[in-house]
Amino acid sequence: MYTAFTLFSVIVSFVVATVATGIGGVFSFNAFIQATVIAIIAGIVSGLLNVGFAHFARKDEAGEDVEFGHFLDGFRINVKSVIVVMVAMVMLSQIASLLMPQELMTFQLTEEQSQDFELMMMAFEDLSEVLQANMGSFYLFVGLQIFLSIVLMFAPYFASLNGKDGLESLADSIKLALPNFLKIFLAIFLVTLIAIPVTVLTIGLGLLVIVPFMQLVAYDIFAQLTEE
Image (cartoon, rainbow, N blue to C red):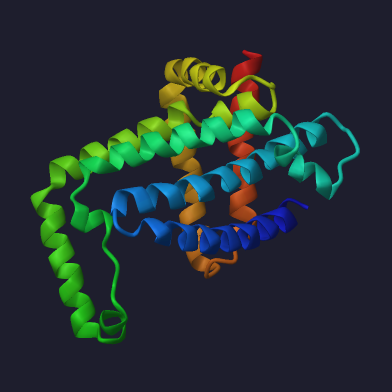
């Protein structure tokens, strides 16, 4: 059932990303606004989908009779707070992206470049030069993104599982994650070390197992820390 919901989530996310890209096209006059609009739409839906794993897992762990529909509890329970949380998280991430040069954030191969290996390599060489000239900003951006992803990772759970409002959920996530930052980082790092080779060796099919595994690890960390 976890794998089935993962496949369902991938399909829904693909459709939403397509719609979000179309809506974002209205704001093509400004790359930052366009990227932010797309990220907010996609982020809200992915947040509601992801928290569904936690709803299902909590019932499953408690020994309750579970149905596929319980994965969709994220779309039924305290939705407004989850939306506030996801919008805040996306906005912080987008603001952090301002640290990066515009060339890196908007890099995309043209159709001509994707069909010509030499042109493709030249494009990547130009990108590499920009990256090397801005390594300080790049490391700061990556570090800030990792920090935000960890300290705010429990906010959707507080909003959807515990029924708290958006701002309170964000604050509680920071309070819970900061004292345990290193432990959480190491756990996620170990999971990533498992996920990468499994995904590569199975040509992507392993994601149907890895994605729910990562979601369950995240929920279990939340459950253990809140119990403590």
